[in-house]
Image (cartoon, rainbow, N blue to C red; front, side):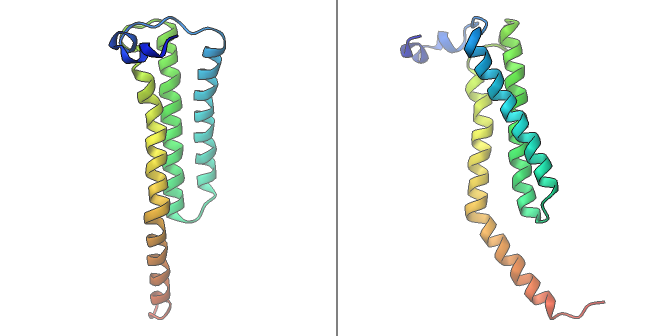
Length: 133
């Protein structure tokens, strides 16, 4: 394959040949890994007590499951040579889903999570001295 093909619209919007050998194995293993990572994170999420960590794990799990399932669906359409749904331009979109969610989660963990944690600690300190029922 020539890298100049990536600059042509015909390459992205043309019916690709079915995948064989290591190409097929690589993509199926990659998408199955995303699904298994999503399932693992869903199970790990149930063991956490803090709601903000649960929310982050839920986001990562959902993005892994969505990316993996959409990827396997795309591979099925490619192997069956279904027009429009097997085109190559779907692959970058499918891969972008977990990448974009990871970037958003990192932003949440690095910027918003410390503020939320501090606010919860301050609230707990204030409620400590308030009368109960």
